[in-house]
Length: 322
Image 1 (cartoon, rainbow, N blue to C red):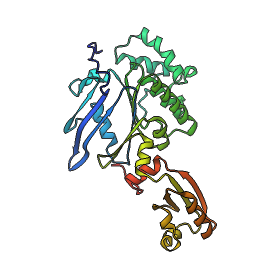
Image 2 (tube, helix red, strand yellow; image 1 turned 30 degrees about the vertical axis):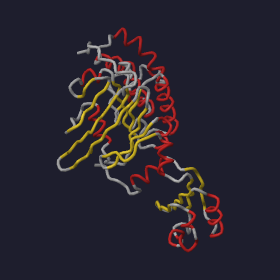
Image 3 (cartoon, one colour; image 1 turned 60 degrees about the vertical axis):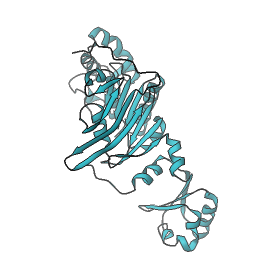
Image 4 (cartoon, rainbow, N blue to C red; image 1 turned 135 degrees about the vertical axis):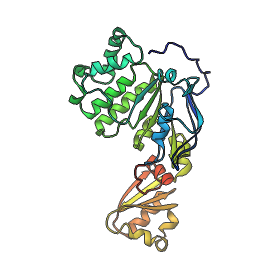
């Protein structure tokens, strides 16, 4: 049944979405711990963290699919889950996994989905052309999802999430499994939505995606917030500005002799991942000169980035899905 009650508009400076002191247990596991965050109108908030950090559970609570044990969620001036239907009427959702109807064409997927929001077939037909054009799928209107590439399916899922003209989009790893060209096209479409004033909650494992799209980042691990802020501000706060990667034969031996060779005095931190040694420093040139004197190593000198931040805050060890 379509929702006809108009929700109260939030104050101009009020957050569009707010989660306060969320907690969730599954048996003995405390998977979300006192988590709070806000999303402002027109803002993209990225949620990043390792596997098992609590990202999916948090997103499910935001969508009203999982009830928190304690804490409050509100959106558009409405309370979740008490007014879940009215909230969902203003949300667009792209899940991590394909939920397109394989028996319907691209156009039919949009038309049928519009019915769930009370959009008439006539109105949905008027919107569909623009949505298919936005998704770069105008030529595929009559094709079924099985005939589409992975990138096309993700763009169709995004177009479908826009049928109700939502104010807030919730995207769960929307570019997972896409090749670079498809990922860049998806990013361009999401940037366009932000320019139109849409708000986005985005979970992602791609740090370049987070840095390109997100105004702010929420970093969570073991169910709790460990950092929050603008990407460049977080990098500046937690990291040395320059990184030198050293790899190839003899690279790992540098760690064992770092004190004797003076490398430990030139680098603020030294970390190892696989066959690569990472030197974090505030002055790269003295360190590069010292490395050149120690041997013919393969090096990469670059600025610190979000991946460095992620690994410093959450560790380099592999996490199993939980």
